[in-house]
Amino acid sequence: MTSVQDRATSNPTSELSERDIFNTENSNKARQWIQDMINTDLERRYKSDDDDSDEQDPLFIEEDDPNWLDEPDDGWGFKVSDLFKEDFRVTNRRKYDKDDDDDVQDIPNTDWDFQPQNFSALDVDSMSWTQTVLHDPSPLVALIYERYGKRGRECYHVLRELEDAANRMWKSHVLPPRLIKVNASFEEDLVAAMGIEEFPTLIFVKGGKLIHYQSGYLTSDDLLRIISYFYHGVARPSPFSVFFCQKEGGADPFL
Image: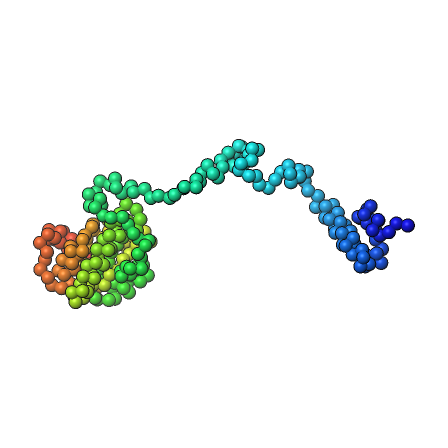
């Protein structure tokens, strides 16, 4: 008479009695027999259509494997090491060095991403434009700028020169105007409504009305002369006399 162990070894799927299943000595054999029955039933219900084994059709292949396929559907024949070297570095091409504008040539590199917290000029969008500009009669200077693009460097340094002029006024115990800035890339409708097409453009506002606007690069000394003339009653600066005559008295883009 064969034992339970011999029957389970010779035929794992053979029938076992209830007494044999609950026998503590044969519990491991019983669990294996139950698992084999479940696996057999699952294979019968969900029969795979793919007859290839895992060895013949692996889920992944090493890039150094000599059996690497060169067909377009299998990696296009490229290896990761062919595209990314160990000494791979991302470098920015300074295309603005080839710009024909002499004013841009002398401007240092842009530093937008490293010192945004140092900007005292607040970013204003179209939702807060009316409340910030029109409802407050105090003097205000708004910079319409582009952060990226051909004039990104120039816009950045006009902003730094503007804030430098404001800081110099504070140190001289003179009240500077409020400073705001508008990103033309985000507020396209607002910039289009004001009719501004050149960047950077400085808008000088007093009493909720436009009194002057100017495009191009300016130093902090130039900005101090303009701000002092419009907001503090200083004599008109002679280098800008002709330019002021051209810019003043135009249509008010805020109305």
